Length: 238
Image (cartoon, rainbow, N blue to C red; front, side):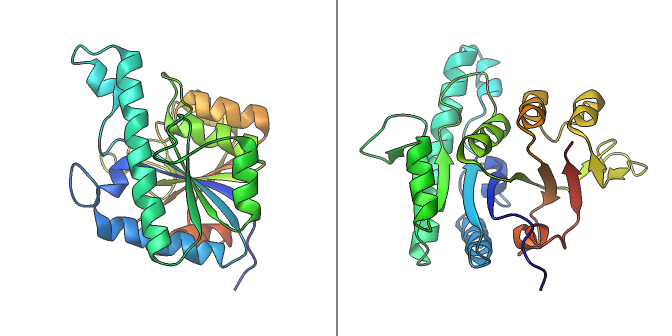
């Protein structure tokens, strides 16, 4: 078995993926499978923080299109990510893994507040850190949150888990001629307008020299495979 490439990472999970085969809500078998994957990665000696999206509950952009202000819609979406973070924290703890949910919002009755010190301490104690609440500010995606938190906690890479095995020149589900890239620079990802992450996330990763690894999480063990350098995906770096 190859040695892990990185020792501290941030994994970005979409809220939509947590819905499993459903269009809304939390699919417990899917959450449990993700928890198993994260536990297996931790056993490799890797420190893990996870940023979860909220699209299985609320998408701020969609809510704002129905007359709610964008700021309010985004706040609703960020609160949805807290619910998802609690679901993942519970699944990890139920399986015996030390885990803690940290929120960008102050809600002491629900979970701890994210601070750099709290995250560093939890990782040093061997806990899987689940980050909810986005950045705590509207207009920023959870992709940007993942890069921001990675920079804050000194992670060596961001792993963007998706439903496709990398970055393509076009949507491979619609265009059979779409080309998959093995590597891209941050600038190429921005200039290409690839929709796998937003431009703000790529720009922040470029500024902080953080590699982003885009891969499919459909298969069990995919996170560990990518961290051992054995998986199939796209590395965005440089």
